[in-house]
Image (cartoon, rainbow, N blue to C red; front, side, top):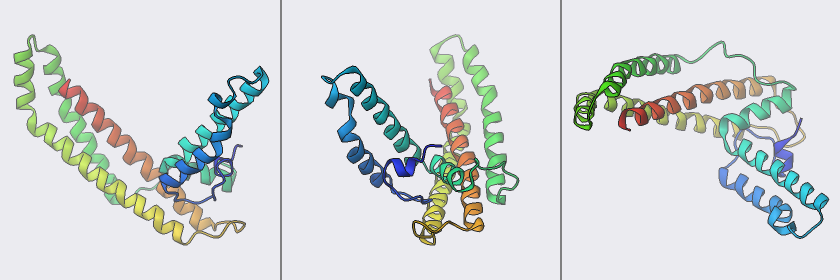
Length: 201
C-alpha cells in the first residue's frame, strides 16, 4: 500500500502538526505541479498529474487526525483498524445525548416543512430555540472532547519510538482506540452541524 508518510518525507507518528504537513506538501509538490509542465509532452504532463494527485492524497490523509491514525495502524500492522468493542463511559454518555437531541429536532423539522408561510416557519423556529440551544451546547462539548483527543494524540506521540524502531503493540492499541473515538466524535459533530443547518434554512 502507499505510505503517505514516506510520500511527504515525514516520520510515521500519531501526531503531526498540520502546518508541518502543509509545508512538506508544498515542498514536494512544487516540482510536479501541473502548471509547471503544461508545455511538456503528454507523458510528462500525465506523470506530473499523477505525482501531484498522490502528494495531495497524502496531505489530505495526514492532516486529519482520524485518517492519519488509521493509516499509521494499517502501515504498522498490515491491516486496517479493527472494529470498536469498547468506548469510554464519557463517550457513550455523549452518544446517548446526541441521539436524544437529534430525535428531539425531528418534530420541529416536520412542523417547519408543513409551515405554509415564512411567518409560520419563523414561529416554529422561535418555539424550537431551546432545542437549537441544546444542539449548540452539545456541539461545544463535543468540540471540547475532540480537543482532549488531540491532546492525547500529542501525549502518545511524546513516547513514540524513533524512526527504525517499531512501536509496541500497546502503543498501536492506543492509536486504534483514539482512531475510533475520533470517528464517533467527528461523525456526531457532522450530524449536529447538518441538523442545525436543516433547522435554520
